[in-house]
Image (cartoon, rainbow, N blue to C red; front, top):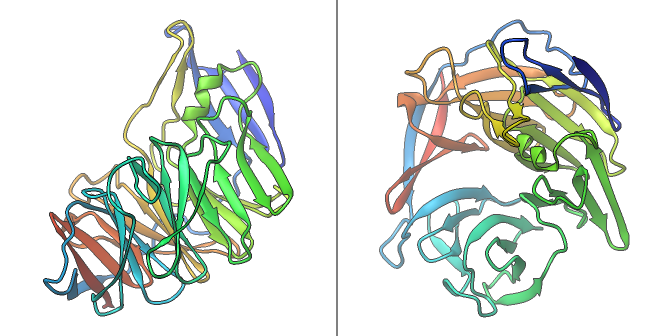
Length: 339
């Protein structure tokens, strides 16, 4: 049994049974269709790490549980500290600039559970409190700017330089679409990736990472080898197959059990945009000794360029030729040296 389901603005989604031996199990596979890369395999670039400094760079403050790193439009770096539910900003030398957030709690300026965080312009910081379901915005000096209670149950939100917002809403069952974009009074939902006949909870099969690129948005699903670019009208600019997805197995819907099954760990872990370059962090399923790989793509076209094996198998986050390594209560900033 198989059915081809229309994917709005992006092709089709194929739902097919796995075979007679496993009744009631449906394989959920995106066929957008994805345009193949010209490269047939990864083009490796050798790099070494040159340790530059630590965050924080002095003893005037500390990090309790650093868990995310965000590079702003300037040279400042923002660290999400899940120990005290705050965002701490540092300059290019590791010196502490500002702390955004007033600790854990439900009062204005406090955060109960830090989810998505980001920047608007060069210094306005926003934090999504997934427990209290609200967005808190902070001024450049760290003081509270405003609080917003969005109507969407979203996984990620990004904001373009003009103020356009994009939301990834896989857990909002009121909508069959996966994305919302809004600018002033203009609001649009787009990206219907699942058919009306599928169990609505299967929107969870397509989580992923979302990043702004100009006024467009880039999306990398966790469980599928795809890099997709949408414009502000919800139209697909490109949908490219990512490199190195050998032995890929799509997730499954367990029909009789009314649940889902994932065949393995996420394929893609996170994505970063550095000007016209996209970096996608992926796991190497063929070589367990290599914990993570950074694949580089051209943001304008989605063309694959090259790949880097992260040295020593450490889990690192890459932005703008920098690698950020979490070590307990500090973040080590490395520079990537090309060999």
